[in-house]
Amino acid sequence: MNENAIRLLMFEDNPGDVALIREQLSESGGFFEILSFDLLSQGLEFLATNNVDVVLLDLGLPDSQGLNTIEMVMAKNPSVPIIILTGLDDEKIAMEAVRRGAQDYLIKGSASIEILARIIHYSMERKNAEKELKLSIERFSRALSDTVKAMAMAVEIRDPYTAGHQRRGAGLARAIALEMRLDPRQIEGVQLACMIHDIGKISIPSEILSKPCLLSSLEISLIKVHPQVGYDILKEIDFPWPIAQAVLQHHERIDGSGYPEGLKNSDIILEARILAVADVVEAISSHRPYRPAFGLKEALSEIDRKQGILYDPVVVKSCLKLFQDKNYVF
Ligand SMILES: [Fe+2]
Image 1 (cartoon, rainbow, N blue to C red):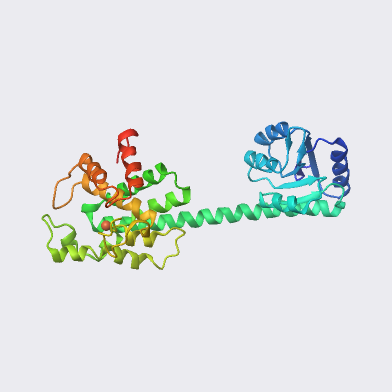
Image 2 (tube, rainbow, N blue to C red):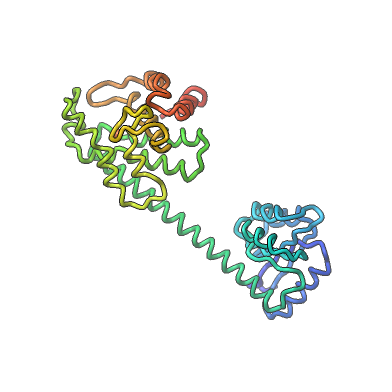
């Protein structure tokens, strides 16, 4: 067998249809290796452990009927292009098949040898382009999250007293988001926002940040500018997550008593409501230049008492569950 041959897997229970495709493709001048199964289950078993270049799929098999068959094939091998080959001439079903991930929809016996060969080649090229695009998006996302991590390090190097605060808070924020069953993209956004939520502290003199006693009211008002400064640093970066907004709102409280804008309830984005809880739990349980650590027990009791007043109760419940039932540790 020619090793450059295109390996076709046919899900087809009609031997006559398999023979026709075999004959057409052998006359097309290209190299094709054709394997066929008349049961979906057998074909899927083969697909799980063997490489194929294209799947030709009949939607009416003895053990599977209809468009769900597409998803079942994709679940076994998401990267193989699927061409539907069916006797059903129905435009609506054809559109739905493509929407569900099929590369093309062919009516049995309708395509000439040349068209069939071309459709097979195009489906492989399109699927490859899809894979490349997916890889580029993943590379781009990684580069963005590495940029956020580099920014977080810059803040921590300058401000050793809060070194680790953002990192530990980010771990907790991520765990809360997971516990709340947010979708993976949103979870990543919550974690990254938390990693740099105090980036605006870069504008505050180090003497204030590391002062070993309580701060004056002037110093406190200087510190309160950091969410806005953080937002100004980040707002021009076109992140796929609302990072600048979450940083701006991380000291907002749901009763409107927070800053900088005194936003209430759902006017504060979910990412910022999660960040607020993770930030406060980490801060209370850790040592600060002007006070010793109060400890985790005090931190959890604070969010428990103030849930529904300062903090989103759904977020607080998820956070408490992590520590009380799931042995979460910083
Ligand atoms: Fe902060």
